Length: 140
Image (tube, rainbow, N blue to C red; front, top):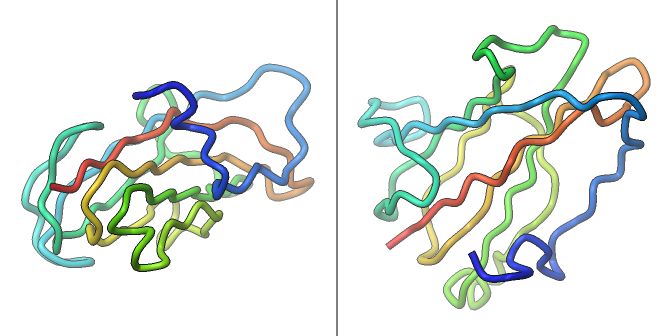
């Protein structure tokens, strides 16, 4: 990705205080679906091209693939880029709640490269315990 791509001006900064000790690893995986909660088509990887009109289901897990305890929550930063999203006034970059525990659904709408990131927050004190690497969504 080009230098500075992960620091676009419309991306909101994390608002949570960061943990002072070690950070937890968050892995992201994604599956392509016909519609939200619809038929699974296939798993997909970061930077793998997808067609518009489908849905991606993102799942955040620990480094060993297990879910996090209920004492944590995942917030998602979804950032659209490129001309199509800009022309539709849909660049985004805000934080969103999970749809299901550790899960975020996103419709593939605008051509370009977009980013989805997961941020792990401890519920009791709202401390940021870790964040995933960006998952790059390429819409043809």
